[in-house]
Length: 155
Image (cartoon, rainbow, N blue to C red; front, side):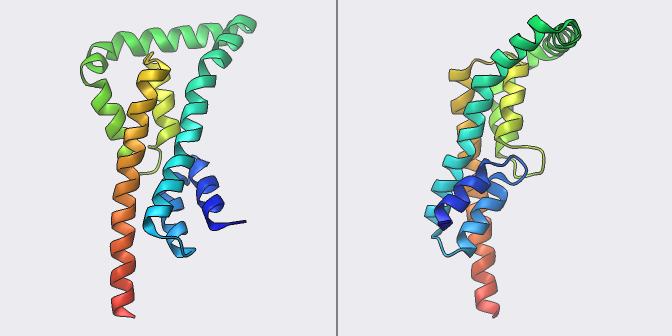
């Protein structure tokens, strides 16, 4: 498999995403720019799929299961009631920042779930999540490029 496809596929996995894909691409001999581009592309794909599919899947489950209907209704009502004012005011900044932070548990898939939970529509959520992915990828690329350069100097 080519290094580009390896980076793309690694970035699609929520547990690894760009945090692993970019350094992997650089170590596989790709330029930092190529690693960045394939990682960003690979990380946007699951975010878009999650945003597109989670609503219909949840609707299906709610229609066919009383338990799911009660669970999701309570979850959405409680979450939106307690946090909707704050989220309406700061939601875009929070979503971009949450996705951009290169820490475990944050990332595009989690950002898509949060966007869905707060009722942000696909066309508003996807650009915000994509911006977060680009920022996270820029942080990771800059950090690992610097680390690899320092390691080369010391070797």
